[in-house]
Length: 265
Ligand SMILES: NC(=O)c1ccc[n+]([C@@H]2O[C@H](COP(=O)([O-])OP(=O)(O)OC[C@H]3O[C@@H](n4cnc5c(N)ncnc54)[C@H](OP(=O)(O)O)[C@@H]3O)[C@@H](O)[C@H]2O)c1
Image (cartoon, rainbow, N blue to C red; front, side):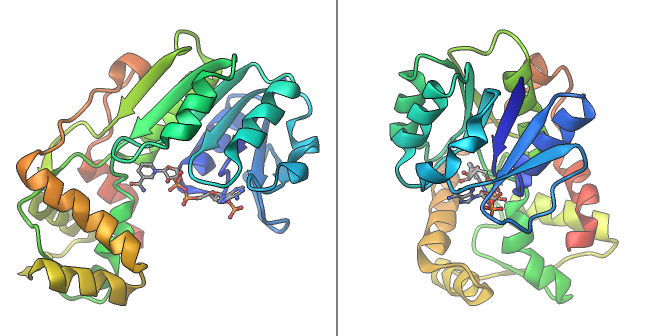
């Protein structure tokens, strides 16, 4: 029986399909792009989650599916999964802004369900700080001393693979965070170590940071969403989580993430 992974061209889904294929699990990756190239051993399925009619053939022979959140007409896709004989469903939701309607739908589906709630992806820092670091300049930061618990996308993928293929995850909601609390200043220092140069920080105000994010290409609402978390964490810093009971290994450190992504900076 096949595992279907939505978001197979994405940050987390891309690792999940590679891991499953490497483990010899028949895996199908969903993409809207007929020209997408998926890792070797991964069957490509073209379809759009927002249009359940495009997914009829996609679910054929599927025993487990991984979905992510925030697309239209979500109920239709969960219904289709149930009608198609899928037995297990894993939903990539969110720690800070969970998709509560879809989570409910998944819990009420009658399938073996697991909800994953990852917090801040370390990978966000490629888009937030990457442009300034790649340009060789200082990073302009409004919240250099705020603490985050960024998580390596490979750890999120490891939890997803465990939930898709292992036992003991049915009916559980897994909070997924990084293993250590680090200020932005410490995170930037670790990226500097990975790229081999000291990265300076230029402190700016909230409004300037917002304008900088928008100038880098973030839509206004996304810039506000990012800064909203940083403001929240000033008074209520998130606490790290050990994923070892689920994945069997300690969570990857931010230093490791930065080394893995040195080329992105
Ligand atoms: N970044 C964070 O800090 C954070 C925190 C918590 C949760 N999350 C959530 O985690 C999930 C995964 O994030 P990610 O960064 O791995 O994703 P990503 O890299 O942004 O990739 C998004 C994926 O979704 C697919 N996709 C988008 N709309 C689709 C549609 N209508 N039908 C089918 N496929 C569609 C894209 O595939 P094609 O373009 O190939 O079709 C792509 O593979 C997202 O739901 C995100 O909101 C993110």
